[in-house]
Length: 130
Image: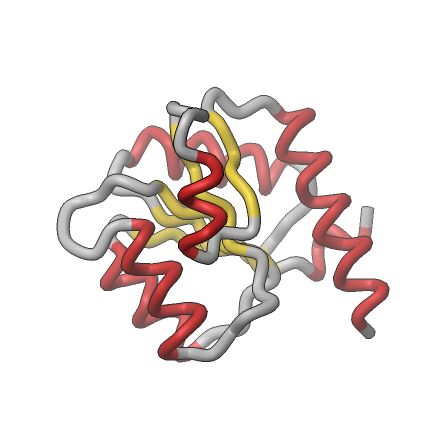
């Protein structure tokens, strides 16, 4: 849909395979603006110069991991409503991740369907915010 094309997404993961798979799914769904960062630090740089509709971040990365990144987004940048999803293979720490400031937790593996459902949700929220 044309709405998907308007979304700006940032994917943060130190595993290139993960960013490749997610970028491919987003592009397949019609999202044209997908940025990729392999570190929390790089993501923090991108977030200071770009506006995003969605950030998907791995939790465990060398250096500034997902926890540090979400803190940076919420506290330093003051972006309290930006959807920031924790990407993890382990669904046990969901409560803790939400307390840290993640909007929700996206559990691997990814399917086109669950990514599509997430984007539709983001679009609905974005639509109601305008």
